[in-house]
Length: 181
Image (cartoon, rainbow, N blue to C red):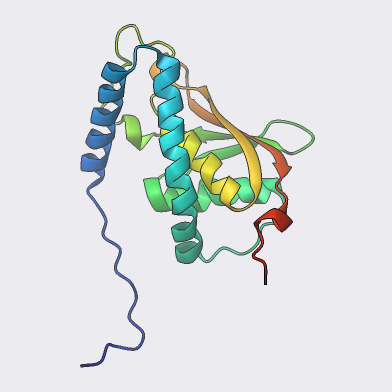
């Protein structure tokens, strides 16, 4: 029996609510396992980094975006394509300096905190969604861009908006990553 010639791969989507609740349970367990918020934040960032390094391949295959020629173009792709594709939201982008290497993603709605009313008591320095920073950082590194990605503002901490800051540090040496023929 032969296979159909042009069959598209099937992507299974999980229920958004199930994902958000599972993420909440993960963060709650990490808060039980680690006493310091900094340790929880580092672990979430490390997890996100691992996800980002793998997710970038799926993103490039499914989105069909071409090569970007500026940091602002990259940030627009992250906001308008990646966030829409994986979280169903489109953050607004703001450039923060004249060098055009510092940007902010402003999230009007953050699906990861949909069922969270406030941070746990005594956890004021917890970055609940630090996984997102790790994902962005890991994905950028896989396309040879070093970046510092942090939460600048968070509605869970009483700020008026949720803001993720992206600072492009330098372009990584592509020769280091090329295959030897």
